[in-house]
Image (cartoon, rainbow, N blue to C red):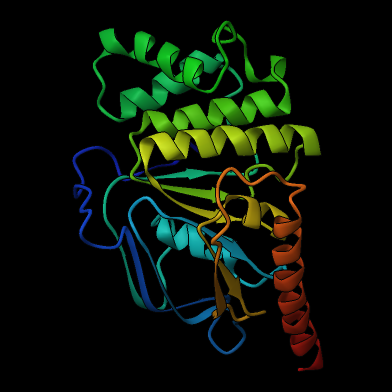
Length: 266
C-alpha cells in the first residue's frame, strides 16, 4: 500500500494564536461499526493543549490514543463533540511512511511543494532540514538505504517542512532499539525547544512519556476518557536513567495497571 503523506491542513489555514489553546477537545465521542453493534473508542473526552506544550498520551491498548490523533488530524470525524486546532498540523507515524521511490531529500521536497514553497527554494530548504536532523550527506539515499532511526529523522524533517504549529506523533519511536530511541528523544527535544511547536505524543512507554512530556494524560480503558493528568515538573534534560524519572514512571504505571484491572473486572 502506498504510504500517505499527512499534510493537515496546508499553508493558508488559520494562523497560530498564542493567546488561545493550540488544541481544544470538548465532549468528543467516536465509535466504529454499525449502529447497535458498534465499538465506542472515545466517550465524551475533553482536553486542551497550550501552544508549545509537549503532552503525552498513555493508556492500555485499545483505549483510543491513536483514534484521538486521527481526529485531531481531521482524518476522521467524531460522532459528537467539537475539536479545534489552531495553526498547521502535521502527523508522524510509527512507520516513517516515506515514499520508497523517492530519496530522503525528495520526500522532504514533496512536503515543501505541498506547503507552497517555490520550486527554486525547495532543494536548499530540504538540505537545511536534513542538516537540522543530522542527516547531512544522506539526502540522495532512498528509504531502504537508511537505518530505522534515519528514516524516522527523515520523517521528522518532512513534518518540520510543513511549518507545523502542532505535531501529532503516534508511537514514532516504538519500533526502534533502545539506544536509537534515546538519541531521537534528544533530537526531538532539541527541535521542539527551538521551534516551540505543540506536541501530542502517543506512547505505550510510560518512561518515554516522563522523559519527554510537560504533561501526561492517562486515558481510561475503552472507551477512552482522561482518567488523570500528571504535570512533569522535572528539569530538562531528563536522562532516561534518572531516579526521579524512574519514580514518576512507577507511579504512573501503577495508575495504568489499576485502570487495566478495572476494565478487566468490568
